[in-house]
Image 1 (cartoon, rainbow, N blue to C red):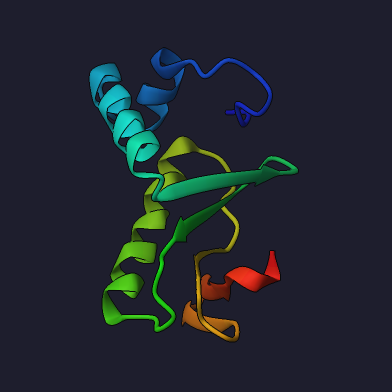
Image 2: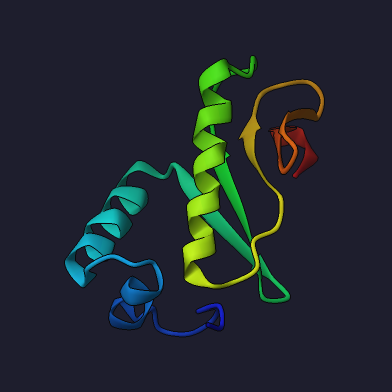
Length: 106
């Protein structure tokens, strides 16, 4: 599946790739849009999942949250390292594939 970058999002095509019903995909998208919690950066056909948190101190539950990034593999697309953008002072590993990322880096 190619990344839907710069093209119309087609949930009818996306939902089966994620192994969910179309109405479930619509609900997930609605929640993500409303909460502004998760963003996907796409570069060179690779997804880079990010969450944004207001805290400066990474918490144990952040590790659990970023472990859910693995669900993106259902999209049958390459997933790169992800992270949590936050107010921490320095880059800190959360898992082998995700970091707490200081907002000042961007």
